[in-house]
Length: 231
Image 1 (spheres, rainbow, N blue to C red):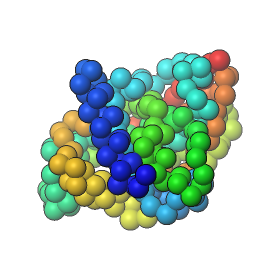
Image 2 (tube, one colour):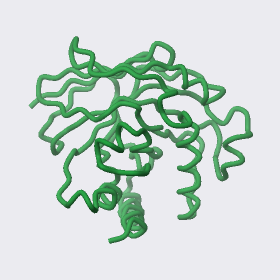
Image 3 (cartoon, one colour):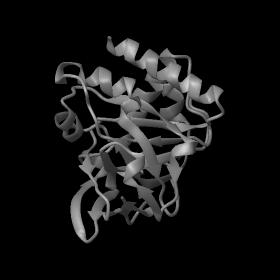
């Protein structure tokens, strides 16, 4: 399977999910940082779908039995104030973004194929996306470049797993958004008002287990997203 066929498969599965009544919440940008590309053996970003049925409030208790090799990622997300059909509208229109906040992205961290086809397998499996734990609040955002200075912290209990600023993403979060808009246009899709976009993480994935309490913090945007894992 080629990468293009893997995306076609991902969009076909998304269409089936919508046909059975699921609602699309937005999209995710994955493997945007060198850290994640090196961890997963890739040389490019990937994109996936985010579903309302897999959105969880901060403070949620998640059962590890509902996931396969659950791993988490801390990252910034944005909520759109307007439809975004073109790269030009994304770059030029004021007020395109309604808010920014931190999230815990959930992953089924499993690969069954060889590393040679890792990107294809990742894309076909919706970028191993398995859900999102939302922040306790959303912070108004007039310019996505404001995320460059945002400091993201990921903790497991009292242990600091990692810390990084938005500027550590190549080109910042807006660069990934541009690539997402271009990607969706190939399939006749566009970003819609009210949707969320997970902008990618400058930090790696961390496997988690029953008993772990995960918190993603950012003093400037969204404050915190918290999840506890049970067996």
